[in-house]
Image 1 (cartoon, one colour):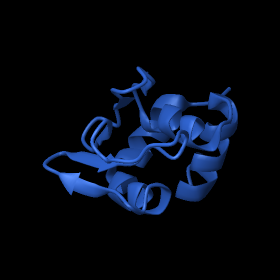
Image 2 (cartoon, rainbow, N blue to C red):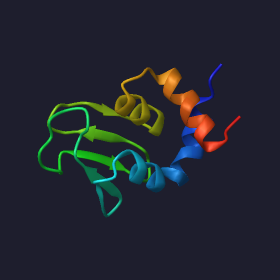
Image 3 (cartoon, rainbow, N blue to C red):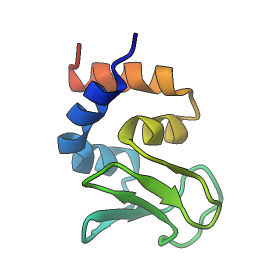
Image 4 (cartoon, rainbow, N blue to C red):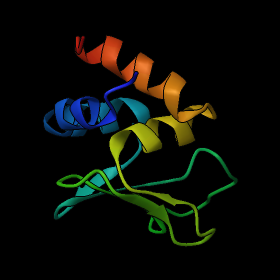
Length: 95
């Protein structure tokens, strides 16, 4: 059984560093990380945003969105939630 809540809780404090790694061309705007969406031919930053307090994210141009860091990791990697949770847990040292 995957403890998604525990993994997400561990990921939130590390989210600024994770976002710098996953979306290196992004920038912080208040409590949001604004970046190009690497999953599409995005030419201007602004529509893809991640709330760094909650982990919620959205691409307002496409309607893609998620409610936590695991779903963001899955979206960016093009994998399922379980695989993304396992990789994120390993990265964060969560058992």
